Image (cartoon, rainbow, N blue to C red):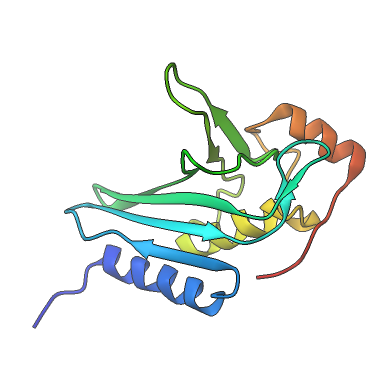
Length: 158
């Protein structure tokens, strides 16, 4: 009998969530590598990449790592992806490599991985209840100012 780990359960929950939203998400789960798991996924949703430009495809990498008794979660755009213009995505630039964006979660209470993913997707679509301009840490201050001035909303899928 095989022991199902907490990480396996989380991966299965994410897989179920992605499968329920198959029309808007493609995903690939990387082979198990010890205490780290990676899921690459593509979202087919409209979101801003600048103040006046929309894109409809975003490629992400989700990494989870077991750290003592907790699971660390990181969501960032893949190097070949559009970069969201969004208050909760921090742009990371390193010498000699293409910039990418990293999700900065604003909700400390709900650490459920599927809830974090759902919150990120709804926020990326500029749903009013999923943008928190008063968050302690804002990833992109220009996008926050623009959002507060314009109050955009694109969809309420998911």
